[in-house]
Length: 199
Image 1: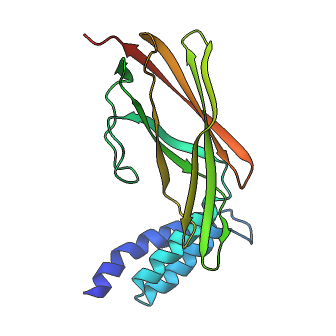
Image 2 (image 1 turned 60 degrees about the horizontal axis):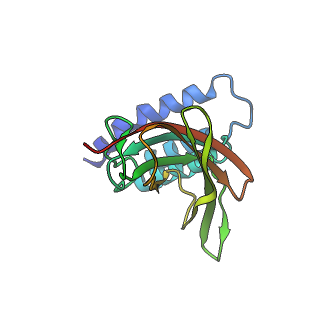
């Protein structure tokens, strides 16, 4: 029974290894290394070890990527978990309604924290402009986030809540800039939205 669970996953691992081997240099990197190790562990019926090898390799690979925000969107409520959110159908808000943004971050640097833990740290700057580009609000470190865990994480997300009470109906652009404090690098993203008067 256990062999049946492992069997279907092995062709995918073989395919991944094969794809990574094509045209790769002698030092292939964390993805290939982890795929090979995961395949070895899977062949020994060590499913948890194989999964951890792939997860660790992906976490190491993530840190070689540029700092990016792969997903950022307005949501109707505070997200419950990574990719567990209710997207807002349209970027239209009634005056007085709070703007909640779901944000994923990849490419963060992690460092040792204490004896057994790892840590990442990023801040988020805010700029609000009208639809003509005039800056209406500017705030450094609107958000300040430190993640501490027993291993480098891959699925990092947060949410940002902005209260624009007092703003007039019209078109706006919300610009957030994510700053990786440890790696000293930044990446911005923009979310246009419209404010409408309550009926």
